[in-house]
Image (cartoon, rainbow, N blue to C red):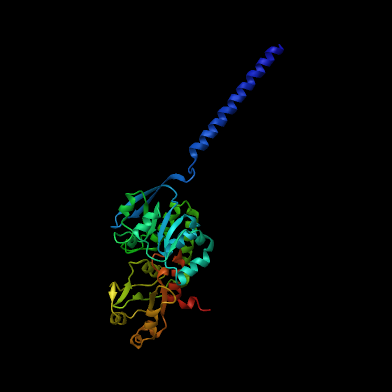
Length: 337
């Protein structure tokens, strides 16, 4: 009888052990199958971007980029905001002036991780020597005379991304296009939460003061950049145009190049003059101090404001900065004191 009980006990233990092994094995298999990221590999992320000729195509990312070349300050600024300084092997940015200093002060640790910051134009040969796996820049970055076309790099296994609000890639760029770009980069580097935080801040800034702005008559706005030969007019097809539109202004002038006489004739209510650094405000100073422009409403009413290029063009993580400058120019009464 004792032998029979022992036999039954042994069989019971074997069955229990078998069940435990089966359960354990199933759980282990389930965990392996559900794993999304192994090392630097990840589930494929498909991103819609543009080629050098503005055609749209899908770039598939099977791993997080590790050797990134970035061209233009706002694009580097976004990567630093995402905590990705260690991914950047080369960055072409203007290292003089206030925009760079602001970035350096805001992200000192991330900037220190960037392997090389290039104040001069990166040559195609240098870019090849960097051995990149991803290049981020404007449409003007990917030309035969600059870094090479997107097709040229893609054929060599290097992923590319053109900022859609740059160089009129889009017929009419919007703030939402800029938000989509921010999220695209977030998806590529698996930092969607940080991307969403920046996007939420942009939407919050747009919606702030809506009640006070609604019902006010629309103001005629112009955004111009002075050159030696003419004024470059940024119309409502540019990103800054949607900033103005979202804040209740209108931009009726469509000509790309205008003369100083044209500007006087158009006579906007509010004018923003594009600068490249706070130290280079020659155009702004000319318009606000030259007797030639004294007849303009914006000059007479002190409604001419400087705005830096990085705050109104392909703004990325600086979109909120641009919105605040434009809002303050359109509605100074909301910001008195």
